[in-house]
Every structure is written in C-alpha cells, then in structure tokens.
Length: 189
Image (tube, helix red, strand yellow):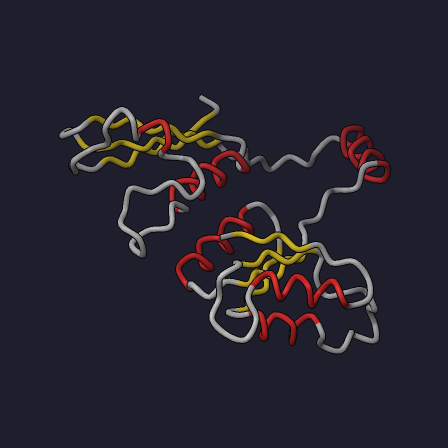
C-alpha cells in the first residue's frame, strides 16, 4: 500500500475509556505534578500529521496500550522528474512562496516543559531560542542587531507567567512593550 504501519504496544495497565479520547490532547497528562508534561503523544501526532500520515491509539484497562503510526511510503526513483511539472511547480512558488516558520523566543524556567514545548514548536517548523528567565530573555531581545540584517531577532515571544527572578512573564511583556517596534507576546501558565 501507500502507507507503512508502525505499531508500538505495551502490557501496562491500559487507559480507562474516559482517558483514552484525551491521549493526544496537548498538555493532557494523568501523571502527578512534575512527572509529565502531556507533550509526548501530541508530538507524535504532530509528527505524523506533518508527514502526511496519522497516529491512532487503542487501549483498555488491564490490557495495555497500542499506538499505531501510519506513515506515507517514500517513493524513490532513478528517473528525472518530467520537465512540465517542474516548471509548473517553479511558477507556483513565485506567486505563493513557501511559508517559513517563526523565530520564537521561548521563556520557561521548567526545563522539562521547555524541552517539550521547544520540540513541539520545532516539529511545527518554527525556530526556537530558549531563555530560562525574563532577564535572560530581555538580554537576547536587546542584543545588538546584526549590521547585515537590521530586523528584530524574534517574531514572537512565548513566556511562562510565573518564573523565579526579578521579573515575571507579565513584567517581561510590559518591558517588551516599552521597546520600539512590535513584538507579540503570548503568556502561558
């Protein structure tokens, strides 16, 4: 067929019916606080979707869990692509350039949450720079601009609200607002 199925099964305790529908939801976890981020399975799902495939999950209490990844097969041929489609593709690129990911500054003091969020954003095609607190984030924002490229270094800031240090996420957003230009900030908690 056109898809390759990869199955991963365990013999654990399984998921009850009220939990199973939420397994791929972003930030959903049944783990105790500090023991999980709810980002693992959503990353798998995002990877499959970006690849043109899909992920499914089956589980029942006492019977373990099976995750199936359906990924499109790569077609490898030695033949050169026909000239007409190539030129059509080139002309469509001129009118509709490929969308580039955003340059995102991620501000998060919890390393586990930061790693999961960064992985997810990277999977979605964005370029992520990480700062562990608001002071470090401002230093990155205020870094001297590259003389070759006078644009701001980031397109977007995603910041936790509660962080150790002199500034929290709201303070950071207010500091960014005082600076010239427009830099959107998303605050999360």
